Image 1 (cartoon, rainbow, N blue to C red):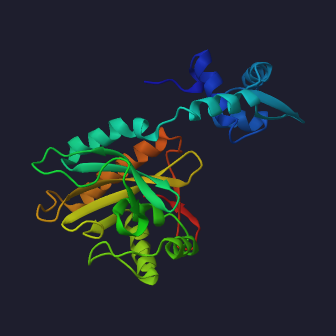
Image 2 (image 1 turned 120 degrees about the vertical axis):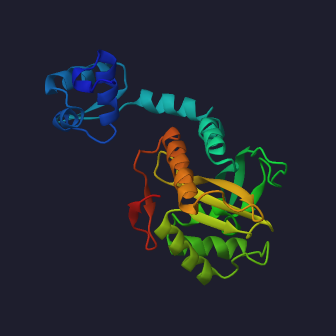
Image 3 (image 1 turned 90 degrees about the horizontal axis):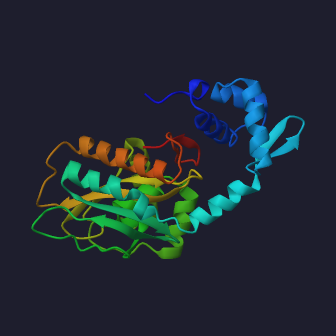
Length: 267
């Protein structure tokens, strides 16, 4: 069992203080968050200041130092969200047997960043690098559902609401009503709205800022009914989305925006 910072080794204590420093400035608060004695916290902070991972802001307050920003910038320059998501996407495919997509928000569209094809005699028409509209896909609607209504309406005004199929939602009021149901159940659906004969289940993925920057989905043919209850499949998609979110730096419990733009627990 992994030890807690209070009885862990020196490395665990330093990491605990560094993590607590993201949300706390006072030694007493960092001590309370980590469970470490104030004297230990003070000693670790002095070392972090010496190596510029923290700064003494005066009056017993400490903040993150420039070396944190330098390292973060260098790492983000080589950061590939699809690579971080790969293991989870493959597990989701093995767990469900369906084709898995991972899409990232790119301007007012979604771009497929990864695809794990199901072991079926057919192939989905999607491809990595393909750009699709937000209002037509489960991935896109999962992202839209995290936004306030006025932001959704603004995007739709810019992009228009092209009818990809007879089932595509092409009215902004109807879309907003639909997104309200997505928020209520915690996952999105695409019922032949982007490609005829294809249905999908999606859930939003969040980054380290708490913003939904992508989504994950599973897809199958309408002629091949879901092989288990939809709620069970949706729960597996949501679990995968949470795992990917954490791999992108999101906190374990990620907030999402409600219909009025308030923060509520994410799916």
